[in-house]
Length: 198
Image 1 (cartoon, rainbow, N blue to C red):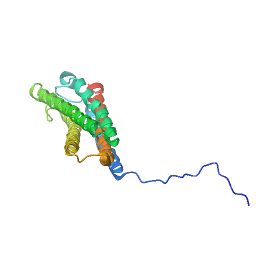
Image 2: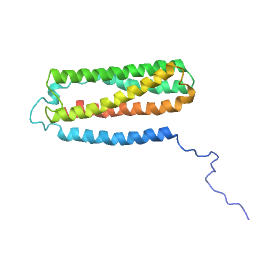
Image 3: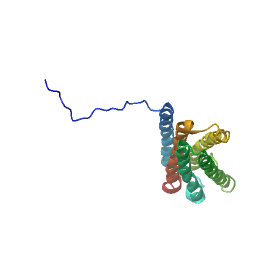
Image 4: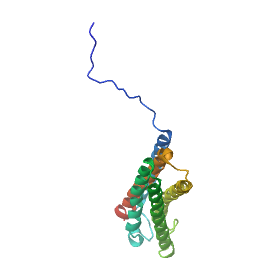
């Protein structure tokens, strides 16, 4: 009896379960993305429906510099993780620290913007619908930046103490996933708040 031939070659590699941390972070990102979607939809729905001012066009200034800083931090965290995987701890620490600095600049810019809105323009979360939805959406993102900066700082301190090496590169890449998510969400928030609904 002749052997049956198949056009599909047999796989010689054994399939492995994905890293638990990656699966966990992906699940968290999906859940957080759903929450952000609700806030974005609410912002768009209530845009222009405030009965009293101030309005977005009157008080919002486009945060170009801080946005560039935050988006650049996605590059620095990516290359930092790559350097750690290849065993270059010095380059990893330098780029990881730069990521923290860039994220800190973004957060400081958000704080400065809020200070101007509150004390110069009198816009608080209870002023009107714009204030409520603006602070809720931008504040939600800022809280995620704060959490990310805390986690990045902890890794940096462990790195300075020689506790982060090539063996932890997979875990570091999982944290980098979170930071990429924070940056991606800002692209959406920036587009909605400072371009579309203005």
